[in-house]
Image (cartoon, rainbow, N blue to C red; front, side, top):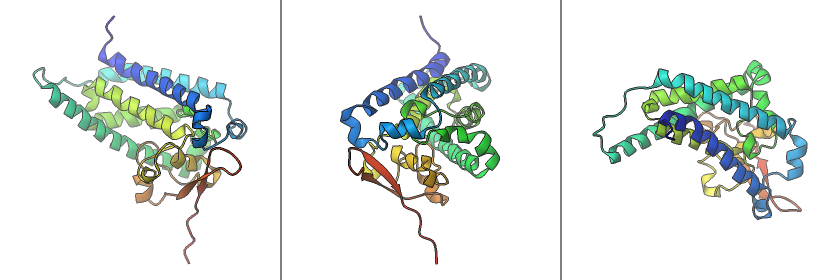
Length: 262
């Protein structure tokens, strides 16, 4: 049976999400990765105010919404395909360029929405506070949140970025882009600090985003997926250190409050 490129674009990112989050879940609770854990299993169970069963149902519902959105939007956004005589190398370079542009556009969009969702009491109370029921994030809960916010932040944001970059004519490139977003979202919520220290000031990760999920850091570090550039450019970056956990294996995030100006 041959599946259309559009069907692949819809299904592959979802398969990537569950496969990758499953690997992280298996590794995260094993002894091999214990020294990289930012929270203990007891903290994960006690601090979160939503059950894992509810999170699982919510994420599955969001993926169903994603499948419906792709089915509806594909006929609307589909443009003329590239000429058949275009070389394969040229096609790959075009796809790589479009993916890179889409990543940047989507990252800016996510930062703007994320910051607005915190600064607006209405948006935070009715939408974004759902996601912060996960005080201690974990891999498959990366997409947990209010369904309306999922439409605004994920579906609308990704669709606009894909259209603006011209990538709507390439379902396979779209599948790669959406899969990368899912992988990065899981990395940022997996609770394992695997990113080398030298990259933590440039690239988002579990420690950087973990600061944002702490009560002390909730008004900082809004950069949501790939780059931390936006927080530094717009004054919402909160410095932090990652230290060994006292009295046991693992790590702990220590936010460093900015010094008050005299």
